[in-house]
Image 1 (cartoon, rainbow, N blue to C red):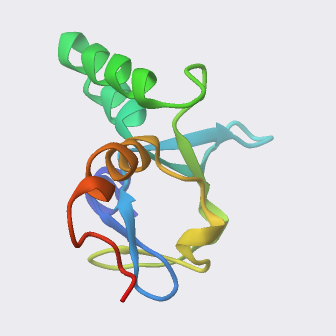
Image 2: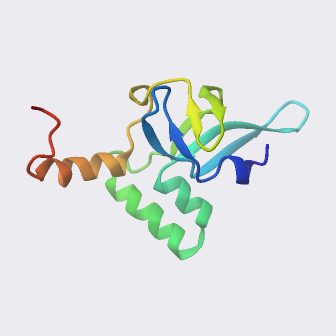
Length: 123
């Protein structure tokens, strides 16, 4: 697998096909023999900011930090063992409800989308 080509910026879908976000970065750990092993997909503006780096990356991380309930929180981690399949998207073996809530989307929903008339899914 070519991590940069096969994973980065791919859409993440839960087991029902509901989108969760995109793979913004990945995390590796070294095994006992010193071989890198892919352990997690990183999601969110903090992970993307770190990947981009420089002034723009720092700005993205700072903005994400301001929107997060816990400003010390790290990027969202999805353990790689939850990945069921990788094709044009990354398919997970769990539903979105089992994953961490994304701070930017939560902030936008609470402060913007919920205030739009007709935005509720209730009938």
